[in-house]
Image (cartoon, rainbow, N blue to C red):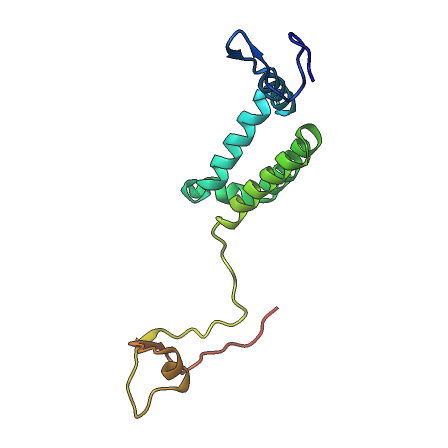
Length: 153
């Protein structure tokens, strides 16, 4: 049994009609000591907002991130954040950078260009099997005539 006036950790004691909350203050101080610095929390909040609203970022930033210089800057920034702030913030930064990269429009050179134009599809008989399975009713189809040219070096 505890003597009057002594405090036990983790338990509230009655003193003059009020309950002493020493354990609550101790747990609050322990929680505050485990939090990151305010600058880290602010950076983390900004990166989470960047991740959340990455689709709203203008195309110019996406295009720069997809360039050689942008990729070098991105990798250096991710590595710097990883070394200075820890792996959690490095992971968030890497995710934000990858979302910037995936939002960039890319032009892809096709290996084969048929050179034809899109023309109206003539419905002759039955629909193709793929059209039946996928439930498609295409109104236009690429022409079936292919123009080729000799390979030049």
